[in-house]
Image (cartoon, rainbow, N blue to C red):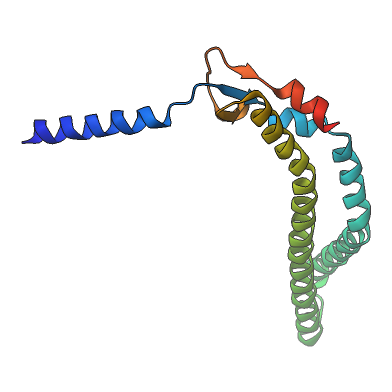
Length: 164
């Protein structure tokens, strides 16, 4: 019974895979195209300048936090109990503010980078689709996603020319 079931499964798998067979497959290195896009550097500088003020503010908060920790560490033995408690409370408040602002900064920065990356990737994807349709490729695979492709057609240069 097991042999019959195994043979049936193997036959089904082979018949299904035959329907997925692609005659013409191309490979494209999307990462290389992305790295060579002139807009990428411009966007990086734009985002850096957009977030520069907030980054500076975070650095200043971090310095104040470190100074407060150092002051507490250095003077805690000679301070009055009330002064130490006040300083500890201030330290906790600053730490919480810093953590909240740092998290918000990271989220906003990541969101903006994703938005801009997607804006750059859109023309690359459109170009890949255009070339695939024009050249009648059944499948286009990212070169970084495949370990080996015998007799593959690399369309990276075509996409780069079309995108620039």
